[in-house]
Amino acid sequence: DNKGLKDVYKDYFPIGVAVTPAQLRDPAQQALILRQFNSLTPENAMKMAAIHPQEDRYNWQDADAIVDFAQLHHLRVRGHNLCWHQQVPAWMFYDKAGNLATKEILLSRLKAHIYAVVGRYKGKIYAWDVINEAVADGGDQPLRNSPWYQICGEDYIFKAFQYAHEADPNAVLFYNEYGTESPKKRDRVYQLLKKMIAAGVPVNAIGLQSHWSLTNPADDEIKTSIKLYSSLGLKVQITELDMSVYANEDKADSTGYTPQRESQQTQRYGQMFNIFRANRSVITGVTFWNLSDKHSWLNNFPVRGRKNYPLLFDRNLQPKKAYWSVVNF
Ligand code: XIL
Image (cartoon, rainbow, N blue to C red; front, side):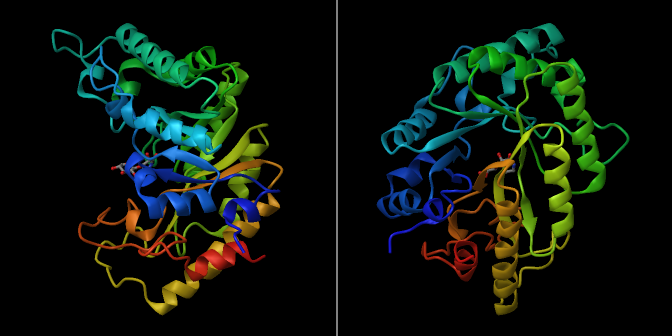
């Protein structure tokens, strides 16, 4: 039959994939995307450095291509992202004289950026990752010590949501983060969200990036995170799902896709989706970070020259065993 993930999960949640415009132009990839997925996230095209390379110049081409494709084929689009510490254009943190920008200047730039980008796609992008990765993994300071934080303190987080809400009152606004299953970071993110909600900041949902591995995090930690964040009244999405076959810390390991890893991955993907389905009342989307093992950002990262196998489709775009464990339940 012609069923894809999106059809199998029709009564649960949309199933998305991170894409580049070039992938949408490739016939084989386009066919796979349209058969399997009903939501798109631009992998890089909407990041600040890509879409706003100079203060007085926006580069809409790639972002428009993805949004136009989605409109044509009736797919949802998640906007990613409006404010992050990576892939920021060089001009953003400096004034015209080359000194570090003041808080006033930086917030006015952030506002102009968010108004322009969210405004352009109003009604076409249903959800935005407004703030990405603002919480620190370790150390004593809960918020990441990025230039955003150094110049603005926590205000930039609150303000970014306000600007996005003003630019499109109907968009679902996300705080997006990785590593939300480890207790320390989970709690930091929780405290931040709680404070925002108490202050009336228009945050609607949390994005759990979910860059996981064969062994981490434990299933119970995943369940705990979903429960904790939804207890704040937030919806939850799995926004960047993949499953590395290597342990995070083991940079020396490049032994590849052994039969044992294949079967571990198959089983674990099935189990992950059991958890997602059990939480269908709060989970409003599951998005994979990239289409196939060939396209994964985890090839060459964090170890150069190393291949990874974290997704449901192999390098020939064929479904892996893990695919069938997600589909057959
Ligand atoms: C990654 C892209 O996949 C790469 O192509 C790029 O070089 C770096 O960024 N968390 C995020 C995503 O929120 O935007 C990142 O995407 C992966 C980690």
